[in-house]
Amino acid sequence: MIIQPTSLAALTWAGAAAGSTADSWRIGNVLLARPLGVSPQGTIVLQIGATTVETQSPGTQLPPQFQVRVLSLGAEPMLEVILPQTAETVVQQAMRERLPQQNGYAPLLATLAALAQRPAARQLPPTIRTALALLEHAMRTPEEISSGPGLREAVTRSGLFLEAQLADPMALGNAVGEEDWKAALLRLATALAEDGYAVKPTVSGPGYAPDTAPPLQHRGLQAQPRAGAPLEGDPLLGEEDTLDLKPLLERLTADVHAALARLEVAQLETATTSVWMVEIPVLSHDGRDVLQLQLEQGTASDDPGTWTLGFALELPSLGPVQGEVQLRGQRLSVRLWAHMAATVEKIERRFDQMRDRLNASGLILDQLICMHGLPQTGQSRSAVLLKTIA
Image 1 (cartoon, rainbow, N blue to C red):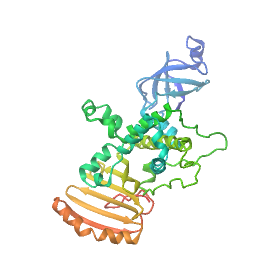
Image 2: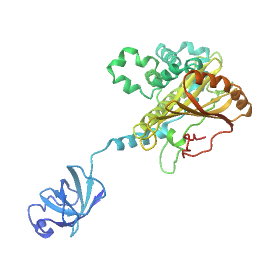
Image 3: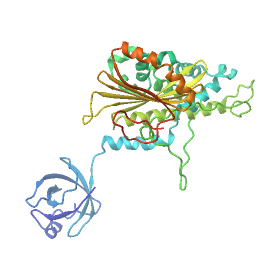
């Protein structure tokens, strides 16, 4: 931010330049400043060093004390306001660092599946094998997330709240790090690094423009398909009887750090918004999938008692499925989308069962519908529900 003093309140610039303030008012010098008030003409009165000056309002509130750097002198010198780094600036800087590194969980889950198929994985160092086992233990099963308490536990252990839980002395007795997804990722990253597997530096330089994906909240909900695992003959797999897992472990290292960056981006987003984006890896008998959740509380201008839960999931047997559940007091609205027509029919056949369970819970069902296709891209809100983003 730049300010330009328009006049001296008590002296003239010529007198100030000839006096004891001449040395301090040199180009490049940093001076201490504080606002004194507003003049009858509406200008801001500042004390800069030993000199009192008037300046036009900078358009933002100034702190009780700050620093300025002298950029130019003359009848109306130019000063740069040096404000202390704010929390928002720290968040923005961390976001810029992690965005190019992030990637979804699907590639990591595919690499884990490929590694589990290699008999040579049994020969890995104990620290890596233990970290891999704990990472798999941190994944939720379909049975666990199909109930309210189970889904709540999955959100709690998704990694989004790890640091907050570690800062809570009451939570330390509940083995916070044992089943937390981020803690398991950090443990595996440490084990791989100790065994000599480090993340390769990101390519950068003039003319290099990587395709950086935006944060999750800018993209909205997206059903994530399973990433393709390496096929037989892929150099990453090697020969069936070889103990050389180096290419696969190098990919695993990159996938782990990319997943950590994605999770930390989601954590940083929660610092500036009341919307939570949560991704939960799900381990079933036939593969690994990613459940994405979006949870938002109504604003004060809307209805703070309203909660909207969106979700997105893609399973090989159902294809992409998305949904929105909005709760206003005891009234519930449910809207579902399915990419495949056959999936719409399967869901609609369960509507009677869903209505019975909702009625038994005491909720009043205002709407229950399943539509063919996926929601259109956009971040506008309808009168009833937040629209998800395809």
